[in-house]
Amino acid sequence: MLLSQAARRRMYRGGRPDRVARWLNRLSAAQFSAGFLTPATWVTLEVTGRRSGRTISCPLVVTRYRGERYLVAMLGRRANWVANVRAADGTVVLRHGDREEARLVEVEPRDRAPILRAFLAAAPGARAHLPVDRHAALADFARIADDYPVFRIITSGRPAEHHRPAGRRTWGELSPAQRTAVLVLGSVEVALTVTAALDLARRPAGEVRGPKALWWPALLVQPMGPPSYLVWGRRR
Image (cartoon, rainbow, N blue to C red; front, side, top):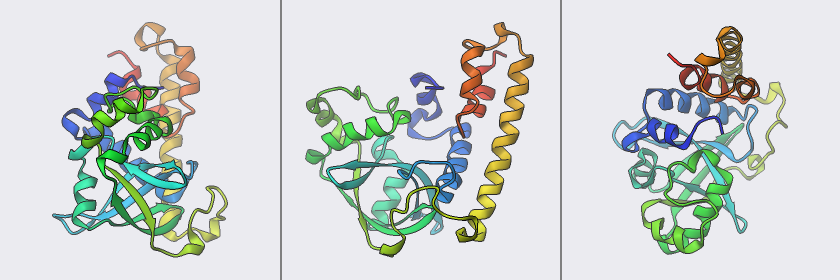
C-alpha cells in the first residue's frame, strides 16, 4: 500500500476528509463515474444533499456478498453520504460509465458482520478506518457492526444498462460530460506523473521517505501514486 494506515487515518481525522482527501475524492468521483481505468466495483454515488438540495457525489467501493451488492460507510455513522442517503429515503444514482438508478436499504446491525469482512477484503484503502483486522473472526466484526452502516443496493433503473463491464464502452458511447472527465483526468494524471517522476529522479535518496526503487512502480498506480509521492513521499 502506498500510504500507511496512520497516514490514511490522518486524512480523515474526526471522521471528515482533510483538504488532500477532499481533492482525491473529487478526482476519484469523476474517474469512477466515467468508468475510466477502474474496476466495475468502483462507483460514484450521487445523492441529493439534505441541506443544499444539490447532487452530492462520493466515490465508493461495492461489496459483493452472496449474490447481493452492498455499500459500506468506512467512516461510520458520521459519514456525510450516510446522512444524505437516509434523508433521501435511499434514492440514489450509481455511476460507472452507465447511470444506474437504485434504492439503498439499510442492513440491520445483526446482519452486517460478514458484509463488513467482505468489504475489507475488497477495499484495502478502508482497512485503516475499521478497528478490526480483515482476517478477524465474525464475532469481532459483530462487535463493531452497529457503528458502521451497510446498505443493500436494490436496482430500480434501466436494466439494459446495468453491470456492463468496465472498458467495453466506445468513445462515441460516452456522454459529453464523461468525455470531458476522461480528458481532464487523463491530463491531470499525466501532469502529476511527469512532475512526480522528475522530482523523484532529481531528489537525493535521503530526502525521500522509503526506498526510491519502490516509489518508481508506485507512480504508475493511478490516481493515488503520484499525489501520494508529492504529498507524503518527500522529506521537507
